Image (cartoon, rainbow, N blue to C red; front, side, top):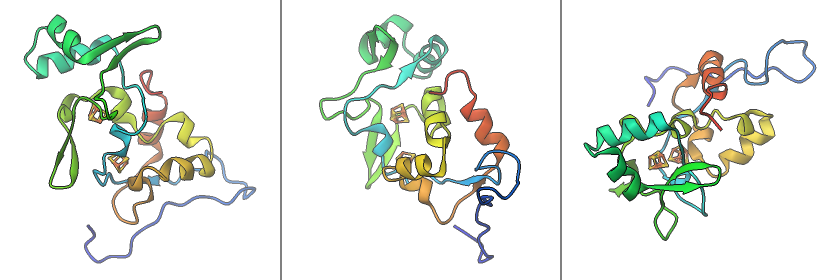
Length: 160
Ligand code: SF4
Ligand code: SF4
């Protein structure tokens, strides 16, 4: 929501303008609408680090081995949360038409750094492609995320 003041759109320098920095140097607007698209869809993976697993198990008040036995799949590439038959993440909940994460305060780093992933930041076109499934990336309102935050997410060692 806004307070009635004009919305300041992210400043994206035109190509060849001589500006330094990446195309998103002026920040990017993003406000999650809780549609849940990023927590479902086709088969996918929510990768987990050991630190993620420890944190989530503690939040759920479960011993680590019980947590991994119930919620984690082991794959050649690493560990991932399990998903339901409809490909919903095992922790996705829906209430009153809104998607909720059942472990939001301790969700995996992969979820925390969305949508500021390398693959989405390659170009404005890459951002627009990802935004086709993530309405929060097209939000006309909501906060503009500063370059520092975007780069911290993009460069996080546990970000895809
Ligand atoms: S797809 Fe985007 S808007 Fe929808 S729940 Fe995920 S982050 Fe939020
Ligand atoms: S852990 Fe939470 S935020 Fe991440 S995919 Fe599952 S429901 Fe979505």
